[in-house]
Length: 338
Image (tube, rainbow, N blue to C red; front, side):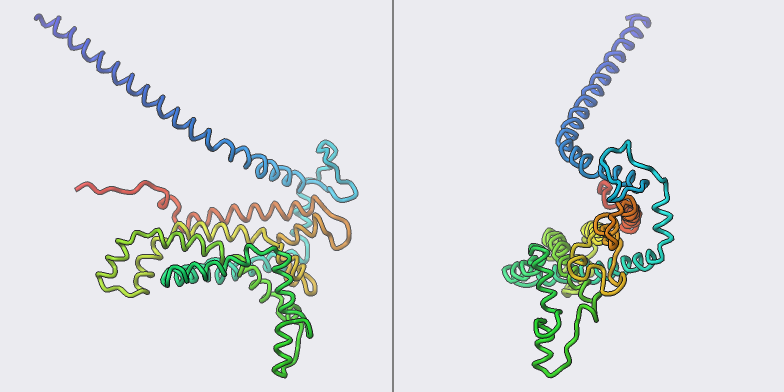
């Protein structure tokens, strides 16, 4: 075989190999495309719901926050809306009670989140997973009762507990003990607001933390037992480090939930007693837009309060993801090759 024939044969073989590689790459791209289309197809219904019931309403609220819509001139015809720019936001920031309502919201979210929605939920989960399984299930079921109870019935129970004598349960006990009776909702409004919302919030975190704790491989616990660890050491060095993802989810979700929740406060104190004593930002948005103290529902002004809630929620979510190092939680596991 001559040198020329050898070169031609080598070039032909190289061309065949390249063609095969190109075909394999094409097949790989086709498989990846089909897999992506299948995934997007399954996600499409949820995506449509999110667009219809979250993004579109959010855009409408943002547009409304830039109008002077009120009960007197409200219309669903967007072309007839009178846009006033950022005037509602300027009015909101210059409101003499806005600062008080803001700090009320911060206090309410921080205390309820730290002591109940995350703290007590984690304690209940740890306790009920370290006792008999049936007993643990029973106690967790008790903690779920406030969440599954209708809000009106739940608040009526608390109002009966805190009411003045002779209806109030606490005051009935005070009378039996010869102690003076007081109106507990007027004397300790924040304590009752936090307790009422805290007992509801515990159940959600308890379910998430309990599921995460019970999913920890038994081998890790057995290994720590072999090493002679105590219960507290297992919780500190085995359980808690493996709860970063559930903690991120519960803290983020419950923060956003507390920021936007006002149902229990509305039914229990309606922002009182007095002037904005237990008023939070979400309740103010409701009062301004739908139930104004002065009888004139200000749709545009209330929407401005709602937009601020959305912005604060986005900022807090980003901060939480940075604090809990979200990128590390979702990264592929590292495999060491020896």
